[in-house]
Amino acid sequence: MDTVNLESLVDEHLSLAHEQPAGRHAITLMGDHEHDLRQTLIAIAAGNRLNEHDSPGEATLQILRGEVVFTVGNTELTMRAGDYLVIPLERHGLTAITDCAVLLTVATRGER
Picture 1 (cartoon, rainbow, N blue to C red):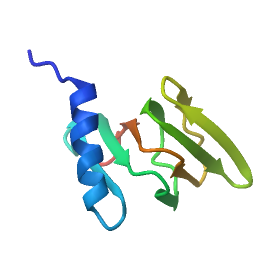
Picture 2: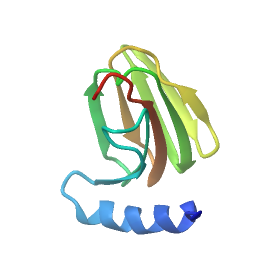
Picture 3: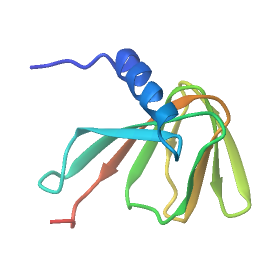
């Protein structure tokens, strides 16, 4: 049984995000197309975003570090470290207000 230090992982991937043209870097911590659950750490440098995209299905978002604005249509929700959200089944996007890291958890049933 292995443990992962999320703080160290966030530091590492925020550094990598700063080197990327899109200002973000992600790593899958658990799961793939063979599993029903996928967890992805996404690090985003301040001012960068995940453009609006379709909902992946059942999913949650936990803010590990920093501050983000989550958008659904014309609605904006400011979220900070420690906040948790069940992602609506609608198109949505995310903008990093500060350097941030989020943990995206998706139920992947039906992808196989």
